[in-house]
Amino acid sequence: MHRTDAVSRLHPGVILLFFLCVVGGTLLLSHPLFRLLSLIGALCCHALLCRDARGAFLLRTALPVCLLAAVLNPLFNHQGVHILFYFPWGNPCTGESLLYGVLASLLLFTVLVWFRCYTAVMTTDRSLFLFSRAAPALSLLLRLALRMIPAMRADFARTMEAQTCLLGPAKTKREALRRAFMAFRVQLRRALENAVQLSDAMKSRGYGLPGRTAYALFSWHRRDGLCCLFLLCCALPVLGASLSGGLSFSVYPTPHGAAVTPLLLFCAIVYFSLCISPVLWNRLEVLAWKRSGSAM
Image 1 (spheres, rainbow, N blue to C red):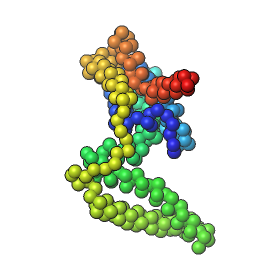
Image 2: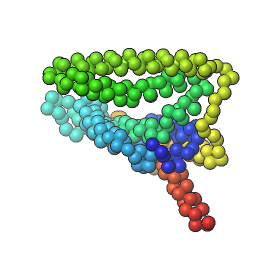
Image 3: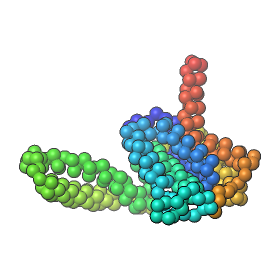
Image 4: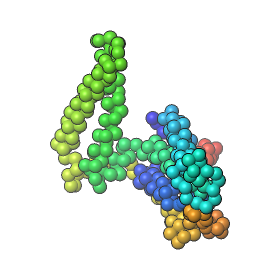
C-alpha cells in the first residue's frame, strides 16, 4: 500500500526511535495521567497511520479483552483498604484492585495500539535495512518468517480450493479436517523447501560476509536529524523526572503518587507532544505544501 503520510518518508532509524520512546514511556510511567496521554496519542497515530480493516479489527477485538482483564482482576486480587462489597464466596472487592485492573488494561490496550502502528509503518524493507548489518542472519530469518505466513495462507486457500474441485465438497467434518491437515502438510513442506532454497541463494551471493556492500533504500536527510533531536528533547526530560521519582504513582495499599506540580505538568505536556509527534509532523508538512503552492 502506497503511504502518503509524513512518517513513512522518515528514516527507519527515526521511526524506530519514536516507537522506542513511546512504548518505553508507556511501560515506564505508571502515573494514570501519562497512561491516558499515551492512549490518546496512540489513537491519534492509529487514525493517521492505520487506515485498513485490520486496524479496526484490532480495536474491536483488543478493547473487549482489555475490559475483561479489568473486570477479572478484582476476582483474584483482594489487596487494598477500601472495600466496596463482598463476593458471594466471601472475598472482598476493593477499590484499589479495581483501579489496578483498569490501569493494567489501559496499559495493555495502549501497547497493542502502539504495536499496530509500528507494524503499519515499519515494513519489512525498513526492518531489514536497520538490522541487516548488525545481525544479518537474524534479519534474514525475520524476513523469511514475515513472508512465510501470508504466503502459506494464500497457498493453503488455493490447495483447499483445488481439493474441492477434484474431490468435491467434504461430506463430513472428519473428511474436511483430514483435507485441511493434508493441505497444511503440503504447505509446510513447500515453505521449508522455499526457505532452504532462498537461504542457499543468499549464501551464494555472499550475504552476511564482511565488507559486502548493499544498495541503501533509505538515506538520512536534514528533517530526520531535526525529528530525532525533537524526540530526544521530549524523551530525556521525562526520563530524568521519572528516575528522580517526580512522576511516581502506586495503587497499594492506597492510591498515592506525585502531587500536581509544575514539573509534572511540564512533563505531561512534553510527553503528549512526543506521543502525537507523527500527527504534528504530518500537519506541518501539509502546511508547508499549501504554503509552497500558494507562493507559486
